[in-house]
Length: 401
Ligand code: AMP
Image: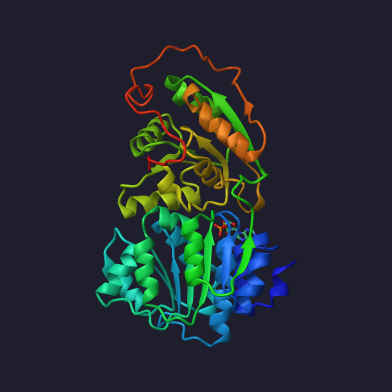
């Protein structure tokens, strides 16, 4: 299938070409035709499958077909869990829709509301995090009476983050006759409930499964906890990587590891929950434009990181759940490229490893770096010390952000 077979308006087709897309991804092939026909959709797809364009393209087409005014009132509302994801979706509207002239705004907390409110008055598409949007609605600053297209993106993540009441309040103020699209990487009971409430006669589409994609190769590097940083540096020296996304368990570790790598001369930055919006944006933009080749992040901060060239994902600390493992390594091998997932593991991680191996249906190779001295003595570095006082991590809980 080609993009031409969707018969999109030429202005949108130009956007597709500008983005460099030649062949639609499976989720796009499945979702675009029913969306163009006006159907509701339930998309089981994770980030990295091309799901954003799968809804952005038909929405742009609908707006052009209906001759919708380009600078408001708001006709399309997209709800997303994090600022990064909201910005990325907004950027997708801007890039793919550049020639359509349709204006879009990203609305999220942590920054002054004034510029967002100003832009919101002249936008037809709003991509928002639920908290800030509800806040603006309550102040009478966001009028959504004309919205006839609603997208709930990464719905499972929004529920995980406690946004369910905000979403319900927002949706209750929209008009009932609308086209609704819900995308989620997983389908827990709560999402099924939302689906029954919000979707009508929806087409279900699925791309990938919650198992990691096949294009990714996995490797485990057993290492004593106190030598993780040294082993990581040895891996960096011996592995040809374009960009590397490294996950740590805590915010503190993300920051201190990035700083350590930086002092050793690596172009490293970090992303974690309690950074200012400016610093997050600087880190994200720098990672995207190649200023940094290494990003150290925590799980929550990494949601929706979209960098097309991530060649390696490193679990500096193994995640607590298989789902997080899948989400993390979903950052590489994106849109059918191949990637590598490397995990530095200690004896504490045995349960997690077994669960991941069960989920991908095969064992993962244990590797050793031949030139690395695994017998080096421990250091007095707090980060490297084993977590003697921490309770044993339980599987199924994701307590560290
Ligand atoms: P998403 O799942 O929407 O986060 O998209 C993942 C990545 O795939 C993004 O970098 C998109 O720009 C890219 N992408 C989306 N659709 C295509 C396509 N048809 N061909 C190549 N890359 C794509």
